[in-house]
View 1 (cartoon, one colour):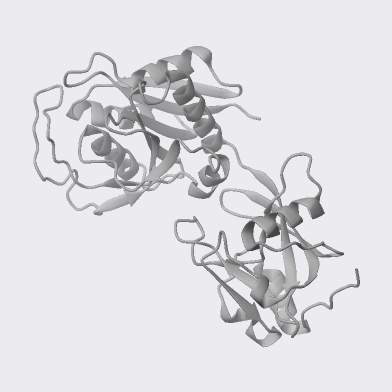
View 2 (cartoon, rainbow, N blue to C red; view 1 turned 90 degrees about the vertical axis):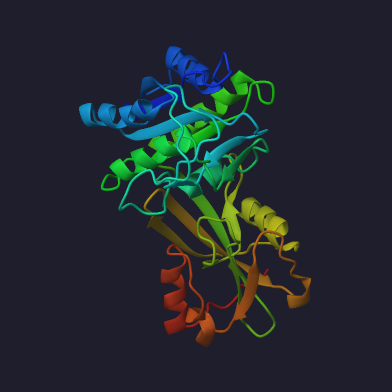
Length: 328
């Protein structure tokens, strides 16, 4: 992989704290290094000057990604911040003695700005990590102020930016925090290439099953073939059987491959394999991971909003008919 450059920032201690975990994690990762990644570390002051110093660094050098780290002293988990809010309201003075109550960070700016990191890729990477979760509020202190100013300053850039709030090391060890942040860095600067499987599942009338992505998913509200990602050392058919059982609570035995699609999303490349999974009784379907399902006839195939990777196949079936199922 071509070497990538990332700006990794933390904060100095503030208030009554002797240590700020965010700066400790920055130092540890910078000292250890990551393969093919040039880490540019910066420990920010907890004041107005510190909130703007990242933009000065970004003007001086070219970067592939920015990760800000901060301390959330009341949190029990590592928090990926989904939004920065145009609000500063301090309960405690910053390290310069500044106290601001209920003010906008920037005039003529949006009320909030969403992270430009790929939420989908982070969801895939940290799906099994119970001590990591998304947060919808970065607070209203210097952390949020820094995040908002960086996102606003890079609003016309393609550089992904994410703020990660870290807990006290008494909640999660520094080693574990370093591990999570290191993985987050890799997610920010690499483009995943995923092998994915989907099932063409029919009812007795020949309609196919479509499932809607759940609330909170990066593609919430979009529809797809049931299925999922192929794990390491797993065959395509075994992966599909596992995914269908996890998602729908039914056992299927994939037959012939119906089609194969290569699709380039903005943040990933997907190689999708659709298999004929035969006929399933409608009443046996139980949704464990989707918000809704529908059985669609040929005439109804375009009644829902399909994922971009699935849509070309669905459009072809709408024109030419749903393929016949092959015998076992």
